[in-house]
Length: 115
Image (cartoon, rainbow, N blue to C red; front, side, top):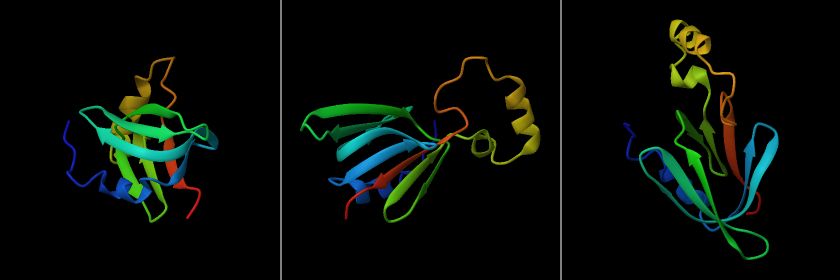
């Protein structure tokens, strides 16, 4: 899988800060971002919870990464996968299985909740 080398450099702003992971409108994780790494298919996070426990959180590598000073958005939308090519989008949507992953056609946002 091809990944630009600087794709996850934007994550450095979030290190050692209290962050919240939201999938759509739902909060899925919260804590201090201690470390992140990536391999071929996954981005891995170590979060320190409010009880000072370190928890691992692993998510699939996104199709597109958007970022600002206090947030990073991982896009898993079909439009970003197909680079907004409608013919490809239609082909992909015809072959979607009945049971899909929770990241299917959504965006995961990681936001700093303290400054």
